[in-house]
Amino acid sequence: MESISQTTTIRQNGWKVREPVAGIVLEKSGEKITIYQAMKKRLLKPGTALALLEAQAATVGIIDPIGNRIMPVADAVKEGVVGPEMREKLLTAEKAISGYVDPYTSQIISVYQ
Image 1 (cartoon, rainbow, N blue to C red):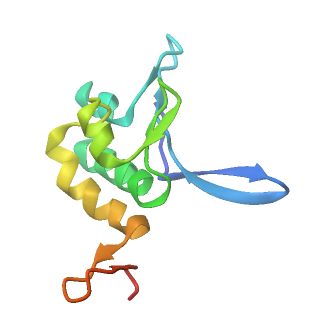
Image 2 (cartoon, rainbow, N blue to C red):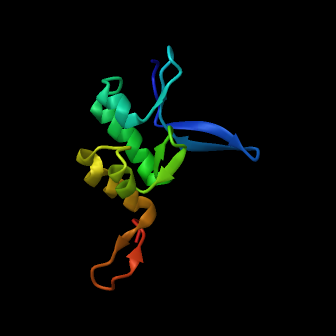
């Protein structure tokens, strides 16, 4: 396996768009596996896997390349796409797109607010 960046660049409607890495393809078999599975098989270091999954959670949601689905962190944990030990860190990253609840007003606010 060669080096992996946290995002891939694709062309969409003439624009270069950066999207998070969805998963890993095993070269010899052509099998697709999730980033979490790659970590469990020791193909990725835990820190690298977490960084890739945080990039997913903070942009589009957790990507299941096997089922070809994108889902919120809670669903990904429930379905085993990521492990429960990563739940809290990924939920924090997910807040970048879903926002936080203001404890004083109960309104959802962005990270920037």
